[in-house]
Image (cartoon, rainbow, N blue to C red; front, top):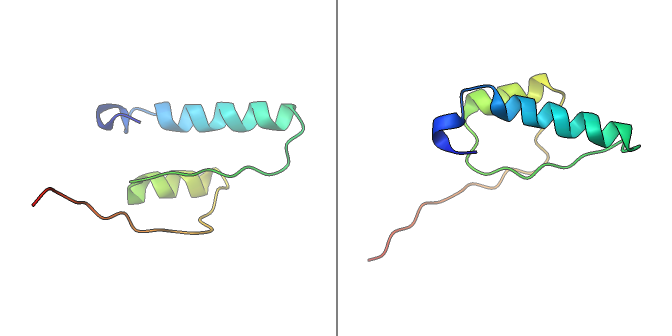
Length: 64
């Protein structure tokens, strides 16, 4: 998700749409890989019933 669109509701709408389509196709489990989520985005995910199974820290790097 582009940073300028992160707090527009688009992310939530996309997640709901994908989950709905998956359920309609018979899916009973979904796995989501996300990077750089904010605390607010994680809270939104949890409100949708998603939970963190594995959390891997992301480290920034720069050329020396």
